Length: 88
Image (cartoon, rainbow, N blue to C red; front, side):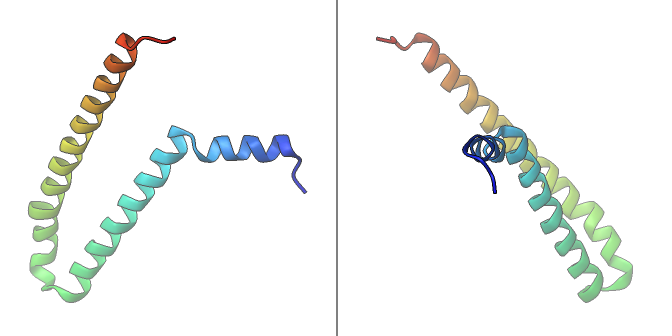
């Protein structure tokens, strides 16, 4: 049985940014794998690899860059807001 301290440490570790990014990357990899597998199973054999390379990879890259820029902008704005906010 866990002690209260071990339980608290486990909760903090589960909510950490590193754990969040690890789970997010795992989800994206799983979805991408399912999409590629579906293309190979149900699509034409000759066009499947070309479709993945020419359509899925660039779209995933652009969407990833857009979300990263929104994340950086939100983090920067939150930092600026917190920096100039008065702490009473």
